[in-house]
Image 1 (tube, rainbow, N blue to C red):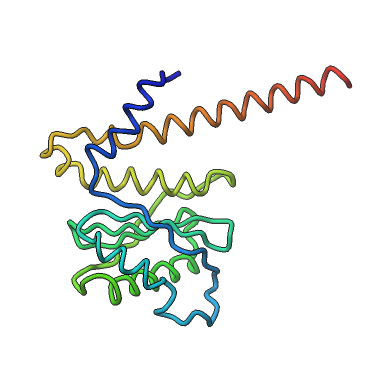
Image 2: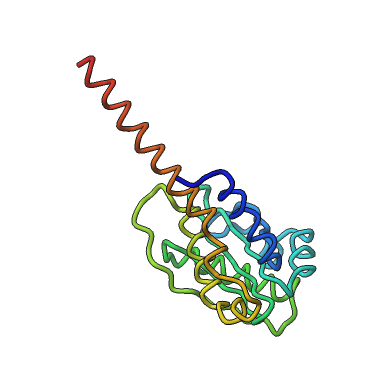
Length: 189
């Protein structure tokens, strides 16, 4: 179990060492894409201006599809690339991400940005969808940027421990709660 001082250290590390990233949640969308809002007008102007303001950094844009699945766009200003992540590997999600990526490049970023689909592992359970795609996009990003991070004197492993600690602690609590509820039911049967 991680001590509170270690937990505080890990939550402070990303801000101090990796202050070059931002997370902006896109509004929830439906697939297949309805006719309104029109293609090219799905991302609110305020979100486009926020992305444009921080385009030299790394911007994570998580997106909730149909209220039951998370995908993610990652705008990497250093490589001028928009990465698209989908843990279910569905064509409708890919089409939506491609349209949103095009909209970002045309309306909020310079035309030099390219759009890349990332082949991610297929998610096997139904309860970790948001965390799964977030962890995967973070890990992939840090792997790609490892050379830059090393030049800055940082350790790529400092970026994720807080999230990983939270995940394992939450799953352990849930498992204990399930076992305890089964044990109390067994007493009365």
